[in-house]
Length: 75
Image (cartoon, rainbow, N blue to C red; front, side, top):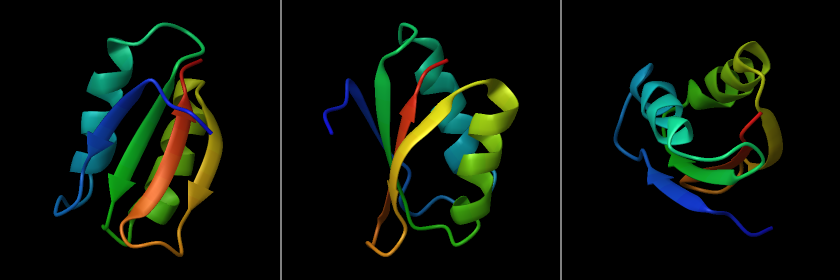
């Protein structure tokens, strides 16, 4: 899947990957996709929860990869 913006959150621990994703998503238009790279083990839970709470859609993820890859479509 293609994406419109990229966020490298590797090396950051909870809650920083989600906080940085929130800030980056603010600059995007509705429907655009942000790719987030993270290696924090808590991101597996935090990113989907963040999307559900903030009205964004998690359109793709690869939690087996290192770093993990999350594709978030702005809601």
